[in-house]
Image 1 (cartoon, rainbow, N blue to C red):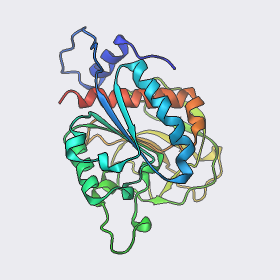
Image 2: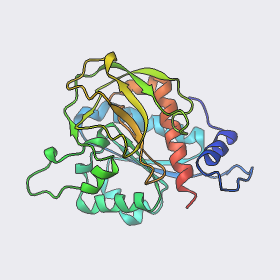
Image 3: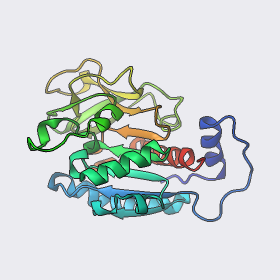
Length: 259
């Protein structure tokens, strides 16, 4: 895993915040703090169990602090106050209580960083009991999209549309990855900044979208990014995915700590 050093961290701040005066003093203590809350869903157990040590190593190599849990009770105002970035690792929005949803919304609206991975994008009322109140804010935060059933797990190609964003600047123009290729009722384009999209000619879809973004940033909430791929632990052996994930976390942390 490539370590991000002093120069790379300074670049992220300059790229995102050109009006901030940068000093050349590298922080000796962890530069920011990350809370990862992972899902208990059985179909993501292998990926999540692999993610825990992988992310801890990434944090150590890149000088940020990371706590990893599957306990959603940690999503509360008092606990979140100690963190700069929240990673929603396969944790679906409906996996949280109303109070936890409100706490995370407050965290994001306050300018803190958010990285949502794969099942974090399970928007829509189809997962809820009739009496359950739907978290409409989160759907709008995700670009207004509603998740629809995905095709089979298979290899396909991601096309990097925006290589000016700090999370995707070090990626090639396209790369292969094996995933479930989440589909939505529509493209979020126009509501969010699209960073990468599926090449639908590279795999078999369930229902072709045509315009099929899978990685995007919501610039209304700086430091937030959704990464729609990441179902299987094989992603941690994909150098391009690892680069993107690392750079996304570093960017979110740098944006958050300006506040």
